Image 1 (tube, protein in one colour):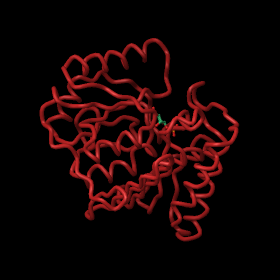
Image 2 (cartoon, helix red, strand yellow; image 1 turned 135 degrees about the vertical axis):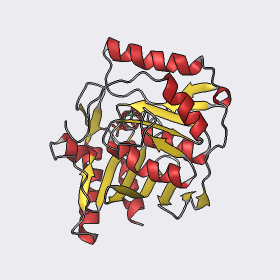
Image 3 (cartoon, protein in one colour; image 1 turned 60 degrees about the vertical axis):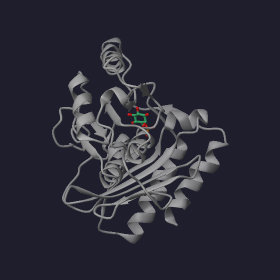
Image 4 (cartoon, protein in one colour; image 1 turned 120 degrees about the vertical axis):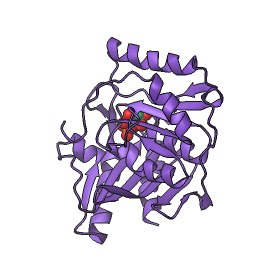
Length: 264
Ligand code: IPD
């Protein structure tokens, strides 16, 4: 019920004029609704769980230290796909993850335009509107559909690496590469088996936290772009339905350095 309350704010704001400003780069957008929804989520959860900690996209942008401790911690992206939201492009989500002792335990992602609700709890499966999710079992990368996102850096050197990575994956060959403008919803497509793999440099812990639980509970793999274990703060990820596809994607990637969430 609480989740619908947060999403209603996003849904009604989509139709209204937005106050848009930028954060780390001119393409890293934020609106008053991002702030409003994050404040609403944190105040609602804090009332229910006064001892818990919070990591939120807009609080971090405002200078609150982004630090994952052993304490129960909610990891919040109030509007994932803010640029889509600004344009009313229908790929916008609210994402809330929950970690205890640095282990991701819960994930909830709500697609604000079509009302799809993705949920997962560690050890209890992943669901989309109550229907169990299952990743793709495809092992052959030449039959894979790959998803990625661009990230906020647009300098020529970064774009050369970004486009080079995409070129390598397109010519691997694979069935194709897609960009939808929302890391969390793209990751949900891996959980539902609609695509075989996702990779990105430049996303944040609040883009990965909820989705990682959902993908793992749907039988998939979420890892570092080097093939090692996921580091939530590292600003990079590879997710896939099978280990075979993940390994093929990892082999093609040239890294882009975005720093870390917990040191910037
Ligand atoms: C961003 C979007 C975007 C991705 C970025 C994310 P935001 O989230 O998911 O598609 O490229 O890395 O940070 O800023 O819209 O919440």
